[in-house]
Image 1 (cartoon, helix red, strand yellow):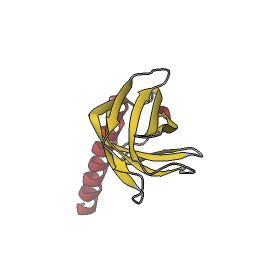
Image 2 (spheres, one colour):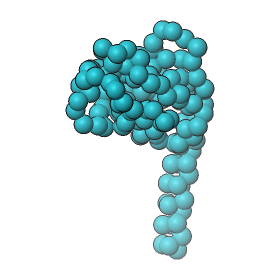
Image 3 (spheres, helix red, strand yellow):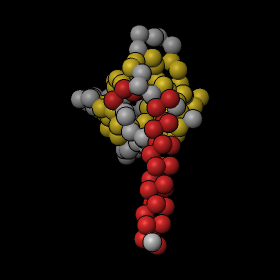
Length: 139
């Protein structure tokens, strides 16, 4: 009898966790920081690096980051200003790397539809010239 009560408690706990996790589908991911993991540095001068976030097909940035000297080691974590709400299961974001002296360096497309994780702590996006991780929380 005691074993049955214990099993019921575990089952109820499991169902509560499962139901709360499923409710994340309609939530918004709030982007707070971006970690620059790596980028193609060929023939680039020492400069201050920063990142911008765009919607696809838009020239206006939604958010930007602080600066980081390119001669320091990577990975480097950048604070995003302002904190950016990103709709889960939506296509159409880009993270672009910029330098204060060279301008545009590279871009990564972010397809939020690919991130069907219940609690994403670290969403990595990369291509052959740029690798970043996006970190935030659920709203």
